[in-house]
Image (cartoon, rainbow over all chains, first blue to last red; front, side, top):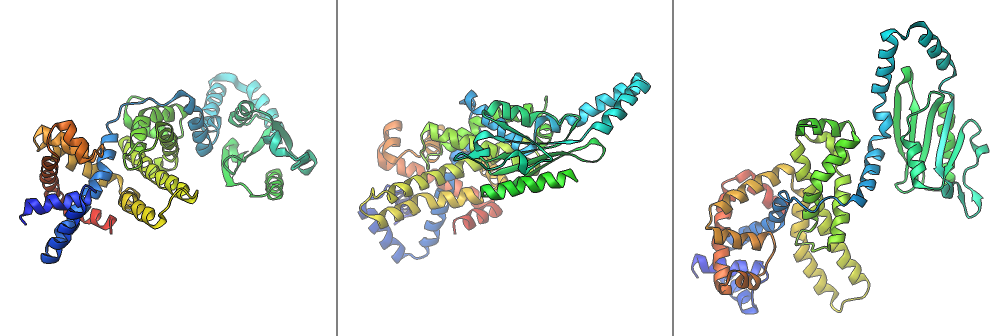
Length: 224
Length: 204
C-alpha cells in the first residue's frame, strides 16, 4: 500500500468514517508493516489535538452573541463576592478626599468634629442575613440574644441585602458580617488600624449550629 | 479605560466597571467555546457554561500579564466545562436506564470524549496560542478550497458525507484532500518539537 492510500485509510478509521472492511485492511497493513504503527499513532495525535483545539482557536475570533443583559447581575455578584464590596475597594479615595478637605483649610473646627467622631466611632457590629436563614421550620437559628454585642439585621429580598453589603462601613460601625448560604461563604468587613478596612471571606460552617457558633465567635473576636 | 493594559490593571483591583467591560468583550469567545462541537450543547446550556467560565476568571486575573491571555483562558475553561458537561449528561442518561449495552456506550464515550478532555485539561494558554498560529499558517499555505474543507472538518466537525455535499465532491476525494492537508500540518507540528512533545504527552 502506498503512503497516500495508507494515510487515507488511517484517517478514515481514526475519524470514524471507515467500514468494517477498511478496519480489517488497516489491521492487516499494520501487521504486515509494524513500522507504520508509529505513523498511525502520530496521525491520531494530530487528529485528536486539532479536532479539539481548532474550534477553540476559532472561538477566539467570535464577535457575537452579546452578553445577555439578564446575566449581568450574577456576574456583578461574583465580582463582589471575590473582591469584597465595591465601596470598601474604593474606600481609600474617600479618605483621601476628606484629608484633602482638611488640609485645604477646614482647620480646627473640622479637626474638633473629627476627634469627637473618632471617639464615638467603630462601636457597632452588624450581622446581616436572610430572614429565611435566621428562622427555619419556625425556629430561630440565630436570635439577637445569641449575639448581644451585635446588631442583627434580617432581609426578605436580594436587593436591600445587596445594598447593605455594598454600603461602606458607617463612621459608627466597627464591622459587618453576613452569611452567604448560596455560595457557602461567611464574609467579614471590619475596620482595622488607622481607619483601614479589612475584608475577609471564610467557608461557611455546614450546619445551622456551626454557623451560629461561627457568627458568635466572629462577633466576640471583633468586640475585643 | 483606553488600553488593554489599563483595563487589566483595573480588573486586578476589582473595579466593577472594568469587569463589566471585560465580561462583555469576552462573552462571545466564551460562548463560542462552550458550543464546542465535541460537546454539542444547546445554546441555553452553552450560555450557562460561558457565564460560569467568565466567573472563573476572577481568581485567575492576578496570574495574567496581558488582557488577551484572559480570552484564551476563558476559551480553555469554557471548552473543558462544555465537554465535561456533555459527558456528564450522557452518564446521567445511562444511569437512568436508557441503554441496552452499557459497555458499548461507555467505550463509545471514552473514544469520543477522552482525547478532548485530556487535551483541554492540560492545554496551556501558550500552547493554544502556538497552535493557533501554526494552524493559521498551515491553512494559509493551502489552496483556499482545501483550507475551507479542512476548516469545516476540524472546526465544525462535518462528516465526509456532509463535506462531499457542501463541496460537491465524491467522498473518496474528501478523504484524499483531508489527508494531504493534515499531512502538511503534521510536518509543521513536528518541526516544533517542544509543542509536539507536549501534545503527544497530553494524549498518553
